[in-house]
Amino acid sequence: VGRGYDGGHLDAPAVATPSMTTVLIFLVVAFLAVPIVEIYLIVEVARYAGIFNTVALLILVSVAGAWMVRREGLGILRRAQDELAAGRVPGRQVVDGLLVLVAGALMLTPGFATDALGLALLFPPSRIAVREVLIRRFARRVNLG
Picture: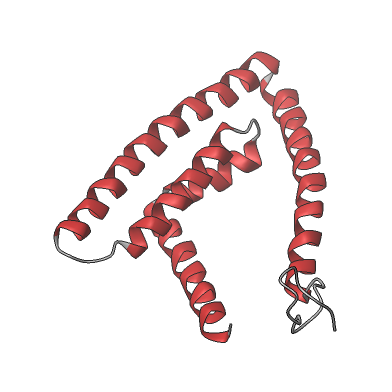
């Protein structure tokens, strides 16, 4: 098939797997669609509430989101420390921490759709649901590969 850098044979050519292709397509669509959706929503809200109120709302949501990320993040850090003190690996807390980080990035991105997604990830019930889906997917990939 081919030779690696160390001269050994490669087991398979380096081609994109369907999952890599799917992720790439999703990212391209997201990078194109999200700004269009955000601009549309901002224009519609500004049309209804006025430009000043719309900008104020975007700023307020970003500040509130930053505060919530800090509060939730500190809580997750405390729970992770408790798990470590009890001699357990804080796996779920690590995933929660990553989801809160993603929520923070979404909340700091100007726009109403990303704010809504960020808020959803900040609230424990929806974050737990997303966390469990991610853990199942990661576990399946680890078991398969």
